[in-house]
Image (cartoon, rainbow over all chains, first blue to last red; front, side, top):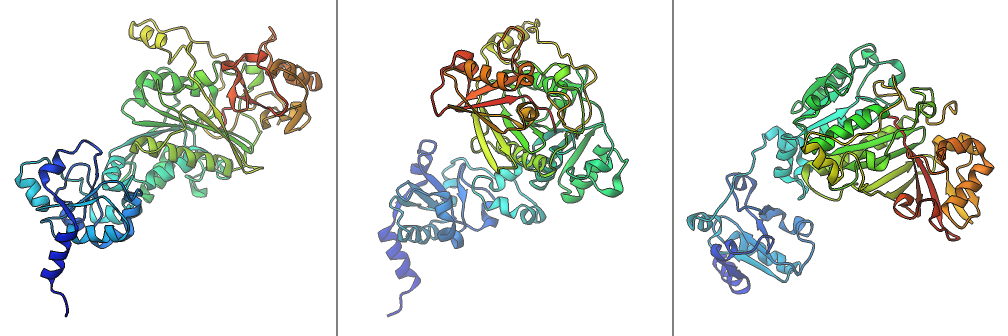
Length: 405
Length: 90
C-alpha cells in the first residue's frame, strides 16, 4: 500500500533524534555543525549564527564537503522542523552517525528569542558572478561579502602586479589600490598582462584601472600615480587590509616592509629573476618580516640597478598568482599562509622548494624591542640603504652580482 | 659530499652550474671549497671579515644557518646546502 506524507513524517520522527532550539543555543561554539536546509531565499531572510547553508535539494551532494567526518555532530534545521527531519534521514543513509533535527525550526528559534543574523545580500548579478565562490563552504556569501568589503594595495602594476590584480579583481576584492608611476612600454607586454598594445605610453595605473573595471565593475580601483617614498608610504598604505609587493627595487621593498610592520598590515612578497621566483607572506609579529629574512640589501656594486637580465614572462605570472592566492587567504582568514616559509619556484625544473624562515629576535623593525622603541618615539636605527638612485617602477629585475646578464 | 644549490643570480660566477658537489664537514668548509673553486663568488657570499654577507642566506636542509650554528654548522654526507641571495625583480 502506498505511503502517505503523514506515514513518511511519522517514520522520520521515529528514527531521527530531535533537539530543541534551546538545546542548540546552549551548545558551545563549534559544538556541532549547524546546517540550514531551507531554500536560499529563506536563508537570506536570516539564519542561525555560524550555520552553513545547504538547501535540502543539495544535501546529499554537498554535506561531505561541509562535514567530512561522518561521526561529527550535525544539527539540521529548516523553517518549521519537517524538511530537516527528511534531510536528516538522507544523512543517516550516507552514514552520518550523529545527526539531529531542530524541532520547530527557525520559527521556533526566533520565537524563543535566540540570536540570529541576516546574511549580506548579494545582488542577482553578484550571485551569478561569484557563484563558484559561493559554492565553496570556506568562502560562501559571508566570505564573498568580506572580499567585496576588502581593500588590497598592489605595489607595482608590472609583471607580478598584473596577474595578482586580475585575479583579485575577478575574485571581487572591492577596492584595489595600485601604486605605479610608470607608463606602459612595448617591452612590458611580454608579461604585464594588465596592459595592451594600444595603451603604450599610457599611465600604468590608468591602463590597470581600465582593465580591472572592465573585468569586474564591482571593483573600485584607486590609482596612486607616484613613487613609493618615505614621505608618502604611510599615507598610501593606510586603510588597506593587505599589500601585494610587486615592486622591483630593494629600496622600495625595505621601505614598504618597515611601514607595513609599523601599521600591522600583511605584505605578500614575491620577487623574480629569469626562471626563478621567491614568495612569502609577511604577517607582522606573527612571522618574520623582510628585514628578518634579509637584514641588509646588497651593496650597490652587487646590485647595479635595472638591467637586461630578463625574465621568462610566465614566471612573474605564476608568482603573482600565488601572491593573489595568499592575499585571498589573508582577507578571508582561511588556510595556512606562507608566513614563516619561503617558497622557491624554478621554472626550468618545474620545482617548488620550501625553506623555513624565522623572526630575527634582534630585528630593528619587528622585534619586541623595536616595537617598544617605536612606541616611545625613538625607533631603532636601521641599516641605511646605500643603493642610491636604484628606484624604478615595476618591471625590470635587478641583477645581483653585476655584469652577469 | 654535500650538494650546494646555486641560484640563477649567482650561477654565472659558478661556471654556470646549478649544483656543485663539495666535500666539507661544516658549512664554512663547504663555502670555502666553493669560493676556492669559483673565486668570483667570494665577494658575493662572504664579507670582508670572512662571515657570510647579510644579504645572502644559506640554508641547510631548508633551515637558515643563522639559526643553526652559522658557518660552524656541521654537515653530513647527504646534506643539501642552498644559497639564497635577496632578489628584487618584479
